[in-house]
Amino acid sequence: MAHYLVALAVAEAILMLTGLNAVTPAALLPAVIPGGTICLAGLEFFGTHFYAIPYYTGFTAHQPNGSIPALKIQQLQGGGLHNMLARLAINKPVFLNASEIAILWVIFLAATLGLIILASRFAWLAHRQHPLADRR
Image (cartoon, rainbow, N blue to C red; front, side):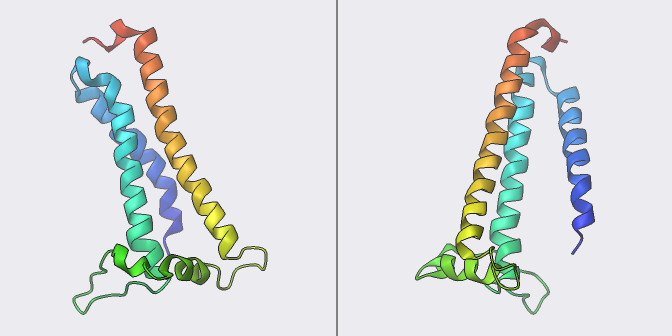
């Protein structure tokens, strides 16, 4: 896997949001950082939860044309989520079982939500402290 490319994601996000900040009308500037954060978090959430995890746990596979289908929610009915967490725990240390992976998943979701809340709050505070700086 190309985990080394993850380091570029932060730089790409900064460049994207800086570029959007440069071309956005002054009235919409307070929404650039929160909106961008929400979009990037949504993209990461969808890619992780509907493509990566289902693929690596065997819930999805390559199609004959080479594409990988997204996870369908129906696949998680009847114990599918527990099965997915159990498959994620395979070949992990003994202390990292399906329950601990579920706890880490909830922490991951809370951290992502916290990031969105903090980005929104800081953008709002910055706009409130320097309202004239946003006018061009």
